[in-house]
Length: 345
Image (cartoon, rainbow, N blue to C red; front, side, top):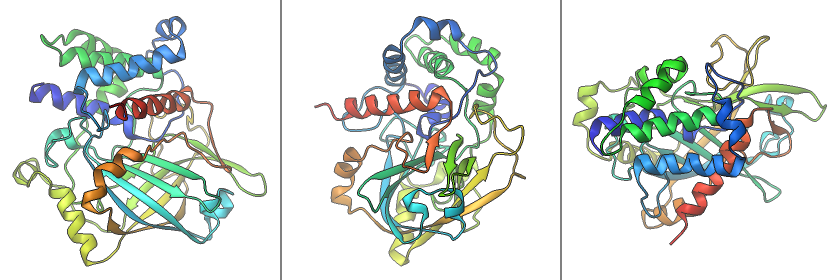
């Protein structure tokens, strides 16, 4: 796959590492294909389109193949229980594992390569009852499409554009009818100086219920507690291949790093069914807690542990529920099938 094709693919396919969204019909939904294709066939077609773009690399994720795992803890704020009765929001120290990643499905992608941005963040919370829940976010505030069927059209267009010989017509046609997908492709995505200095977005609305039965719709946002400007294209091109991973290891070697988990609440009129439309920055927010990252998973165990962990944004505890978005179920299905394929010998 040539560099232009890899760039287009990575920028568009970054959507696969976000938490599951609420999705209504987008600009020009492919409803005809939806009615003609069952769920199982749709999920497999989506996964096939991803593999057609990046190829299959044994033991690695189909997208966000290059990543690094760290361990740490989460402590909720006093405001968190007012939003949700989920166990990790009730106080106490919750163990977490966090995976930072690059967008591309190619394991050898340089951290400063355009195909590495935007970046991914996945969080596994180990709950006191022995269960777990995940957040999967990325560093772009938005999503290219609103439905699983449109996502398939999107991915198939990308796969055609990087095939041999390439056929750009399907992707061009899709983008012409889906301006938010076009915006996702065209938006600047500069390389960060650190995974820790990057803002990440859950994008998709979930329903949060507290002990009093009060319900609110919200989207996760993970914000840095340090302010470092992004790299220029020239700076990113000159960085070492693994500079983000190296920087993280150096940082944690000096002491813990902290990031903040925030919930952006839906305002009246916000489309909780469509994750492709960002909400206003003026929306009310609730600080849910602080993640303290204190050490890397040992290098010798990194690959095996990344293979074992199956982050899934559809893994939700009591107190957090999906919205009526069909993308939630669809993305859960894609993640499960991708995990199965990744673990095949």
